[in-house]
Length: 390
Image (cartoon, rainbow, N blue to C red; front, side):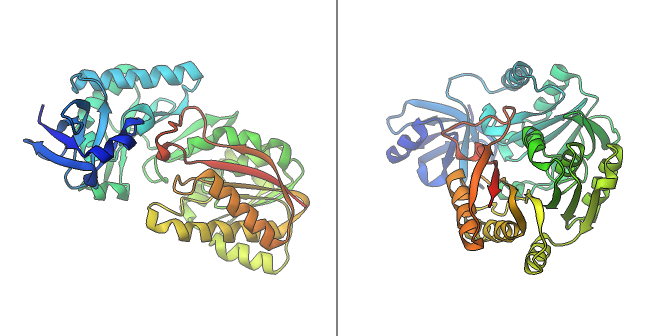
């Protein structure tokens, strides 16, 4: 073992409930022979074994625990963990397109692996996990025999770990734009240039859930990205969808997805800032049967929470003003820094300011391939809400 880290007594209560992160301020003493990324034993204040994980002195999250057992952390360890991840997805029926590894929720902190058909997209978002990337790739190749593996390690969070931003092939090269099937529809996915890993698998069930509310409806959709909700709404019988996004590249793929599914006559795509359009059209008293909002995470750090609250309040307020009586607001939030009770409170405040009465019809979180560990707040991030507006 490369060293050990001894906890302060006051840190033990939080960590006792299975949270894998140990912050710099919770450590009484560090005795580490190797450099950043080393595997260390974590001891409690009495010197008893607490867990084993990887250490990074450059990060505020000083240690991320991999195991509570005194077991070797080696290539075999990662193979067994990844095998458990794949077995769980097979159990729940998520095998074609799924989040194969969901970081802390799968006891592999800092690791994301998304499966798109025969291709895998990998992110190692922490230094300690990045050091094991060759072992992880080897294990994935043994377990799944993928046609290709691509890394999307261009997420800015890596810089907090002292890691470079990079992306590219971890296997033989393959076409990075390809089609997947979801809910009997087809979508182009660009794993090299799309947001995150190229496609948001976490809204799969929620895209199905909109079916009863969009039939014969005139819809405004903001933050449509590559048109996954748009195409579902059109396929479910929407009269017309006006879909807005600020990214020309995303809209080009959205248009192609609409054509791929034979629904482009029902869709109009508009390149614009959603905040500006919502403000302008609400002021013009334009109206729709349904407004759908699926914005990016407005808060990626605690310092941004207040601005995120303001952003969610504004877009939902504008949307509520445009919904015809009896229509529906379909709205999401994908940051764990705005927990569900706060998100629902924001929507209620927006309704009050818009002078509209609302009633909750449906509230979902993420699907089971993105499991939630109650003691790890970051694993509970997606909120999906449908309310009827009077």
